Structure formats: C-alpha cells, structure tokens
Image (cartoon, rainbow, N blue to C red):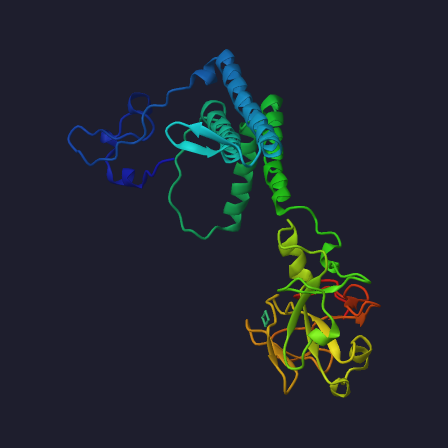
Length: 355
Ligand code: FES
C-alpha cells in the first residue's frame, strides 16, 4: 500500500512509466523531497516456478508440524520432568529443568506458528501491489460490504482451499496449542472432594490441650478463660498437622449452665463447658479474645464478635455464620471426649453450608 495523494501536485511529464520506475513512481533527480513512488514490481520466484512454490509450501507445513511436536513436548515435559530437577544452561547457570523445558517447548510452538504464517504470507499468498487512498475513518455501508468482499477474496487468494497440507497442519497446530493451557490446570492440585467438610474429630476422640498435649478433664477448664484443644493423636511433626489443625482447632469455655440461652448448645455441652471451632467464619483467623462478663469472643482480624452463650451467633462484624459447635461429654475415665465431628464445615463461607 502506498499513499499517492501527492501525485496530484506533480506534472504528468515528471511521472515515469510504470515499467521504468514502478507504479506511480516520481522522478527524483532535481527534487530530493519528491514522492519516490513504489519500486518496480519484481515477481517472486514462487509466482513463476511451481517447484519453488511447492518448496515453500513444505517449509510452512514443516514449521506448523514442528509447532505441533513442540506442543506435545510441552505436555510431555509437564508430566515427566520433576519439579526439583535442575539443569545447567550456559550462560544462565542452574535453572529448574521443568521451567526450562516448558519455556523452550512453548516458545518453539508459538514461534513456529508465527514463522509459518509469515513465510506463507511472504512466499505463497497473493503478491498484488495496490494503492489505497486515505479516507474518513467512519466506514460507509458500502465500504463494509467491500471489506467483506476483500476478506473473502483474501481468503481465496491465501490458497487455503488449494493447499490442504498447509490448511490441515495449521489447524492442527492451532488446535493443539490450547492444550498447553489445559494441562497447566493440573497445577491447581487435586480436587478437595469432601475433605473440607470433615475434621479429625470423631466419636470418642479425646480433647487434648493444644499446649501441653495432655487429655483434658472438666476440672481443667476454668471459668473466665479460653482453653484451646485439639484431637488426640495429632502431633505437631505430622506432615498434615497444619492442614488438620486449621480445621480441628477447638476452644473450650466454661459457662454457668443457666447462662446458656440456646437449648442445643446446652445439650451439646458438659456441665456448662462448651466447645466451639476456633476458626473464624469470616476468612479463617483464629478467634482468640474472650470477654468473661458478656461471654463474647472476638476475632482480632476484623472484629467479628460471637456470643458463646447463644450458640456463638454473630453479634458484630463481617462473619456470616455462627461458629460451629462440637458436641462433647466425659468418658468413663473422666476425660472430655467428642461425640462426633462438627455437623457443618468449619471456617469461612462454604458453598454447601447447611446452616
Ligand atoms: Fe475473623 Fe475476619 S477473619 S473477622
């Protein structure tokens, strides 16, 4: 394309023939600022030699095929290369083998699609030179119709219909490339299934002091203070300790039974000792501030406040749900034990919460 509006200001005598200097070329001998016009059109070798066109076609197909192989290599690398393996790449030094393999294969896949498209356009698509005048930005209906017509003409001239090898390999490369993104979803980890709905608490599990790791008796829970507990058998050096304690952390408070307003809370308590999840139902901070006079517990993160004498319902703050209560009793040896798991998922908003 070229702008030729300045030709109107040049006398016809100065305009050379297209054969001499190309389309619309202007003599420049005495005027260094004159429009040089377009250079003479040189037909490409592919336009006059079908063998050369075939060679170009094979090069384009080869680039698209390499892209497909690189995409498959990306997927294979993702599955087979260990994350903790390192390779030495000069001059960068030691880098993760997985990152290197993923970067290289994805880079090659994208590069080959681009290079194939560029080589195809430069050597095999239509080589007609044309001049387009500048015009207002707003397109008339007529212009849009022309664009569609040109688009269809371009599609025809790209020879997609006549060159099935390019068409198939290009569609193959473009169809395979998104698979790279799909396999990366695996990095989101395994589905949680019902793990979020359950904790380690079960019928008969002893309540163990979170600091001393000793089983708790009712007399260990004094009026006016919070006691933190966890299920027996959970050790701090367990691989899953952090995940499990994040769900099972418990706080115990002794209230006067007559102060408990909620009937179910009273039924699930033992001699006024109530056990609630320590995990705030807003975004999961540990609730840790207790006010004895009001029986309120406060979450320090965003000040959600729960009333432990009334089913731990929210009386202030952004939390959306009461703290889940754990049903407890005392076993024959006099230790506090759970009567089952929490009846609902603990912690922040949950998509299948029943209460
Ligand atoms: Fe408890 Fe926000 S996490 S109030």
